[in-house]
Length: 214
Image (cartoon, rainbow, N blue to C red):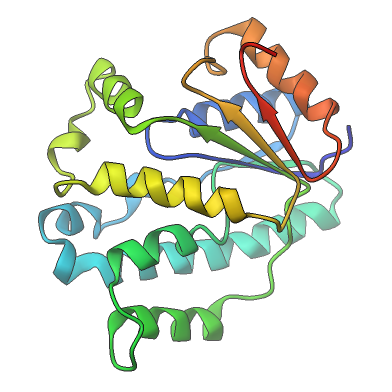
């Protein structure tokens, strides 16, 4: 397989960062992380989503625009890249966090700013979507002692899961491998990780599903 630019996506708690790091080590690739926890507006957003949604998403937009330069430079140097974020993932979050599309509202402003500052970005050679249920995500976060669940607005986690499923159901920009991360542990189970590697190599067409039963 000759994937030069791989993206691993999934909701919080899906394991995308650890799986991305493991893939980067396997392929001797650059690991590119979004580091969402570094967003200085994130905690304020959880406390008051209405007032801090725009600042939260604009921060991510600037960081992703900067990431385009890194990706382009690495591709020019013919180095593999594994990223734990999709550059256009704002299409998942912005409609949830910034309501409305009429002129003068925050969502419209966000798309206007993106149009101005976001350069043309490269398309991944492969996108891996670690699909999980909201219930299993909650269990994982609780197991690792992550108190972020206490900060989420009511219904936020379920809504984000639905948006992820809807987005990737329609996604056609790059070859897509949908891996069942409820059934499989790609972070710590070597057999499951090897199944993921094989599925990447066996990709035919634009979409493939990986389940434990396969």
